[in-house]
Image (tube, rainbow, N blue to C red; front, side):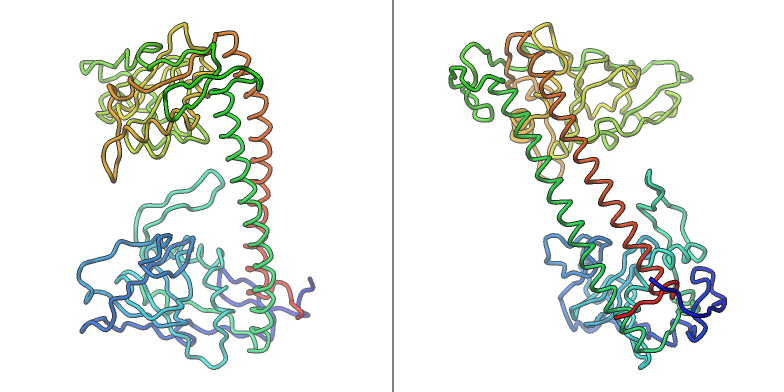
Length: 440
């Protein structure tokens, strides 16, 4: 892609140089801030806004965004083709064009395009430009910012006032160029999004294949011709005739060791909370505390080879085996620590605990709607397959090889998605700011 013939300094930090024939105008000269109240009530159609889905109707199951308030008169109004942004989260991309007439949260802003020299699609891309969003940081009033491992901001609560937004400057190319840029980006980003969608579907299929592979191996074994018998357990189904099926309490002990309350307060501990363990990645985060300053739930002790199972919000399937690097950690009492006896090989038990045969039992016997939980007694009564120990080792070795291959494929697809998203972000920035010239 070519550059323009000549450039000039825009005087705007996030924008940098722009083509010499472009202008810059304050946002207030391009958009009107719509502050129309829903009082008296004009609509009960609540609109929601999320980073992932943009502006959606509150009734949409995948909406995301803020919770609905009871007092509809406290809302503001937004109209079709308004740009809606969350003043608390616009810095991380909570912005989108509305297709609907509806009521929006008081923390949202609705901007109506009124300048005849402006193209809505072009400015939608400006608002979604990460460089522009980052440029808002200096106006943010708030203290909570979280960065992911990739350096991107995940969560932010820094309010940007309307007064500060109105002072910001946007580029305003000739209208014909805006239209070309918008058309170009519509085409290119649609193709990138399709590629991302395809890769995400492939990842979902790989994960599904992995779960089926694990489920079949830990409940049927590796010999497809082995005679089977009914296990008597709905979630396990048929098992090889020579296998046993036992309740967990007969092949393990649960919560053997707990840190006493009179522990020396100056003791340094490594703490693992419920939110720090995921089904896919195991232990993702370890925090350092003195026992005196640690969360009161920091109690569970675990050894290498133990399985930790989240007993709260069990739908998250926070289950993992404790490896050597985490055997000196203190786990939240929201976990159950399961120590297997000589009947179970550690790696086989870890794989069984991550199979549908086990996680579905955990879900069924969990109690509660919003935050389903399972107690230690119910957990101890769940069923587990117990093949001969030598067969458990063969199954674990086989699955380790196969799962490793699948995980490598997932990692490659995930990296591909990140590259596509990075390319999309750079492309949008370079095109809307005039760093490259499009031809349509």
